Length: 80
Image (cartoon, rainbow, N blue to C red; front, top):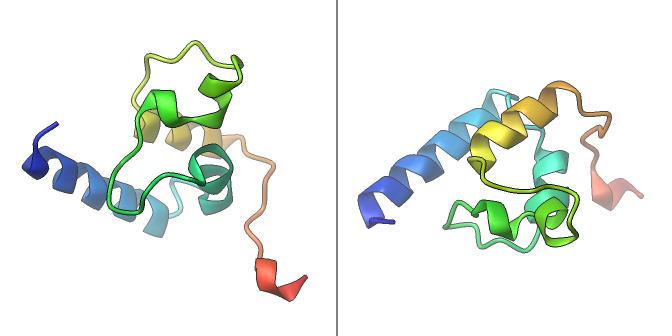
């Protein structure tokens, strides 16, 4: 993926997180080890890696859809 396309995808991810379209806690669960300067691929997702998901989807679209039904609440980990 080219640098320009990657930057565009990073901006899209930031907007989706800021607008609450992607639950940050859900993103962390699925892509916690991903570098902050790269939008991960489907193969980077923990569900794909353990065989729970067949893959083949755009991770941003997948996480937007999953966030609509997420039961994971964002929390301040330092408070615990």
